[in-house]
Length: 332
Image 1: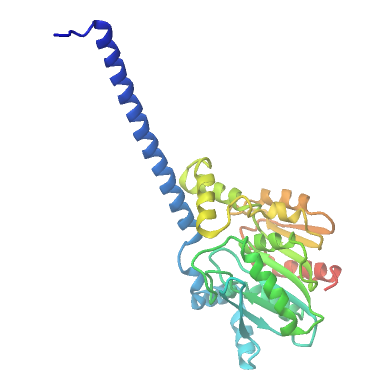
Image 2: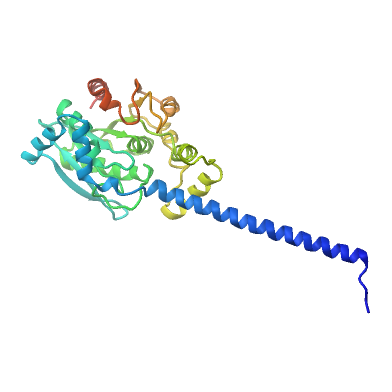
């Protein structure tokens, strides 16, 4: 009968212990990886599919009427003469994309293309639409981005792919307002990021003459990372990189390429930067690297004490004056 030596028995015990340790580590890696993947998946749905607020036009009109005196009367006056009209275009991916438009009181080539923010829709840009149309006597186009208003889509694109739709509206503008149309693209919040992302593309339609960005973020990864830390108390790594890769797999774009900061470096058209000095949602600090990165003609206005997307609401007269002076200097 063979008898195991003490040395062999010790070897087997150590090997068994190592096997248990490796198994435990493997289980731990699987658990942690599953938690990270699950968290990243949840983050994408939480950020890009936050609910149906952006589809509720009736609520949007009610909020704008409440916040901005005279909105209801302006809308009623347009509807009475059938001046508030809407139309659709078919995007290159086959989606139906919707916009409202209003011609200026007198025929003009000067036109504002207005881009709404996150969880908003075109209706929430109508106060600025009224500013351009009534005060500046300009035509307006106010589109719904994907997953908003009457436009197709089941998630937000945070500006990166939205810029293609905005570009297509710029290309459609001559059919609405004449071949000599001159456009300023003006976005707020996510719409401002969309505006900046568009501004750096090459071969823009010649009709686009200038840009106004109001409280846009530097990049999707920085904005989401900031929200992740503030809302959930979680670190950026590894959730943001993993979520970015999942977004690439699910939707064809990632958080890092969706960078307004990178795009404005290539912008050759005039741009007006607006940001509230008390903005905490898209922190005021973000406007400085954006402004510094933009070459050529640019202007910056920090609205004192204004919170996120509240610069026009708090200072309607000064906002109007600054935009009016800027579009004139830009040749619109």
